[in-house]
Length: 245
Image 1: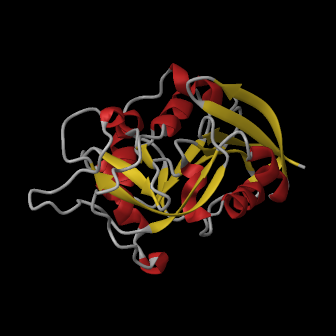
Image 2: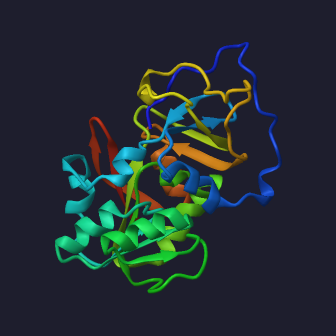
């Protein structure tokens, strides 16, 4: 996700609601249903969601992750399943996990193995996965990267790794966020103000816990989760491979 400009000072803001009772699946169903959307953080930073990439087939930008998946792989927050499908096509056993029913349905349409489940619920093969993947900003799941990485570490087999996509140029941010429709057909990365409905109100979903992690903070966060940073890739997208300490 690449930051956009923050909203103008006179842009109406949605009052922050308690995020304790939100439906995570429904939140991201809206993003996968074909409407352009973006993520608005509690600190005002706006991040576009790469919805088209989620729906597309895996491409050269995904190769760094895919090439390191040499054994059974669990993709947490798999979305429509592009990475799961690509791994299966290479003969690598792979399972996707997502709370969005839209994502699960799309995975099934593509022939991807998938579970409609939360990453923190009981999962098949705990402690036996060679790789756990967190791509496309999914380190934000739950709003606590340390807890999520500890969860990933518990899923790994001996010698396994976590393959993690980072936000380029970022450190660590934890808080609450919501998803918002742009309300127009222009490319998301050209927008600098919030989208609005015809009556002037914002087309926004509920607040939910979220986090952003970048290369400037990944070593400290990984260490707190009992992991060490190994291979890295930085360019248009940023990735690291983490191993148990």
